[in-house]
Length: 82
Image (cartoon, rainbow, N blue to C red; front, side, top):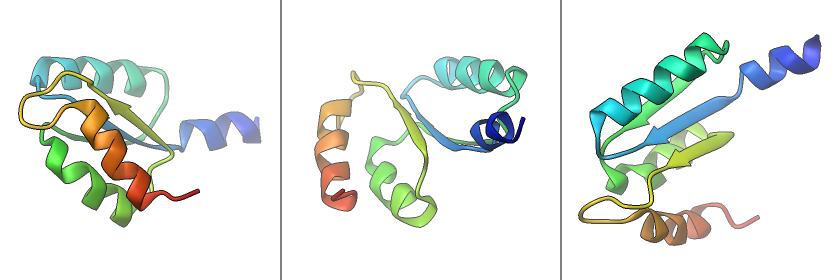
C-alpha cells in the first residue's frame, strides 16, 4: 500500500496549449487519486517550473504554437542532465 501512496503522491506537470486538454487530464488524474498536479499553457515556463519543483512526470503536448514539445524536451535535457 505504501507503494501506491508514493505513486499517487508523484508531482506531475501538465503542459498543453489548450485549456480543455489540461482540464480533462487534471480531472482524470485527480479521479485516479493523484494530488500533486500543476499545469501550464506556456511551454516557455516548463524549464523554470521543473528547476523549481523537480517533477516526477511531465505530460507534454508535442504540437504547440511558439515552442513545440520537442523544443521543450531539448531544453529540459539541459536542466535534467541525468
